[in-house]
Length: 402
Image (spheres, rainbow, N blue to C red):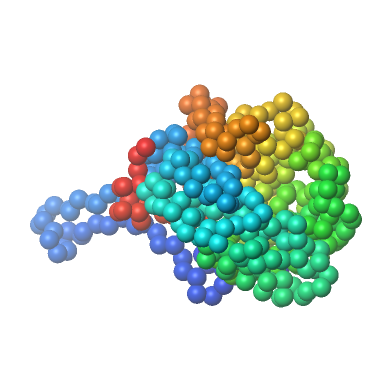
């Protein structure tokens, strides 16, 4: 097992954040004792109100809370398009495209400034390396993960990831949907082989070593890593972007594909993306919509305590089972997911698609399909990754409300 890799926002005392990281301050009750300055003799001074993160979250409107679970897709060439959803409190934005404008940092800063009460969105990108990079012209380019593992030492991979992450952080990108933990030494990526060169190698040890070096590098550069695609797509039957797919049976995953995830969880990685593949012996459909996969396997059996995101719910593996993005998002949150990724369908804008997902989730909460407690817990997980303590915003009161 590798040593603990920790995000300061989630695990301030652990070692992955590096030296010099400071723990988030905690809200405490404040009282004046009967013998203290200004005390009334014979009468205890009244206690000041105690601020509590969960009570602050619960004071938000349903729409405001639901918005925190949504990741709005936006073309990196026109980031301001996401402003209407960010102004409603969207928890994240995902930058897609192939060439970022030189002034993207200023655009991201302006977008974040539209967020209510200073709770800025997580800004995400897909910077895996090789053919999966959207910001390489402004943050630097990385080779395919397979090539990195074949030509670099783990320390060199970590250093390269750190440099790219520092450049991402400078322009306001705070999360990388990487590294891939799939184990694969074969062809791809393509429709038949979803991982291929996106993998760091063909053995659990190789993938664990290099992927966690990459994750450490991202953390050192100020970017949150997201390991994916749980429970591993290196041996999946098909690419879920193009249709339904399944992994090997659970009993086989436990001795091979799950090992990098076990190592990553032991190292306290802060976030996991769950795939849209089904798991024979555990789920009847996509893992991203399955309580058995998320709450049973990932949470209870493997002990993961961080943020859980879906893979894109616009994938054909989802639509082919008759679910639109909104209904799929409801099922994902019911299953234990805390952030929803998707793209806009043809003929629909990103904002239209995002608003529909928000509306569907809010309706599910108002109908009792998703409990208030589950919603609040998901929002708390998002805020934890953001390192946001609502009690420290404007004295704990201004963050409340619609």
